[in-house]
Structure formats: C-alpha cells, structure tokens
Image: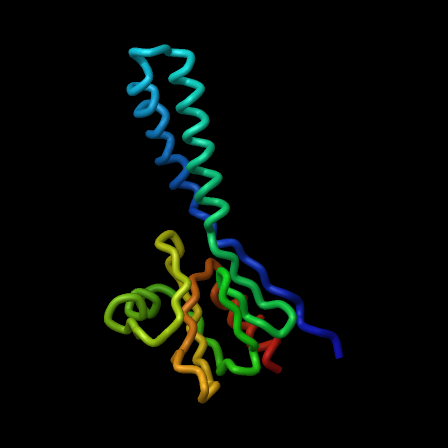
Length: 149
C-alpha cells in the first residue's frame, strides 16, 4: 500500500501585509533624514527586509507527513486524532469567537480565515482538539483523513 501524499503549507502573511508594511520605508527615512538621506534610505530598506524576513521565518508550517500532524513546532500522531472538520466562513468565525475551546491546541494566524478542527481521541491527552489555520482546509482535512486510514 502506498503512503498518502504529504501535505505542507506555510502560513505566511497574505500579499497585502508586505504591501502595507511599505509604510516602514518613509517612517524610517523620516527619522534618519536629518542625519543623511543616503543612510536613511539604506536603513529603511534594511529594516523593511528584516521585518519581512521575520514574518516569513516566524510563520508556522502545517504538515501531514510520516504519520504525524505538525503545526508550528507541535506534533501529534494521526492515530490519536479523530475525524477532521474543515471550517470556512461563518463556521470558522464561530470557532474563533464563541466556540473557542481553551483546552484545544490552537495554531492560528490572523490573515487566514479558514480552519481545520481535529478532535484528539487519546484519553491520556488533556487536549480536546487541534484547531489549525489553513488556506486549504479541505485539502488539509483530506490529508489527515488519508494518513489516519
């Protein structure tokens, strides 16, 4: 039997966030303008690049590989998971607001509006479920289900 195809997704910011962060350039330039226009431009570009790099490097990776669900640095074997549920639109908003479960393990980012909720079926684990952001919640749920089966 073939192993299921692995799933991997980096929850990096959407296209609009680096665009909005371009406002860093004139802000830093304004601070350094009395000193030197050239140094101000160099420092502004370096600060912008550093912020973008920090956003990219700190973005959690969600993956289903080798019989494990990984979300950020946390991992759990798929044999301990129940049936995944892809949440989009109103269902995802409800899960993040009134449906928030403090016992669940959350790996969510503000720029992704859909989630996958997977119950934890290990009686020794106090975590009720995993709630993970995903841009492709149906594909992630299908990958978890395929790895379980």
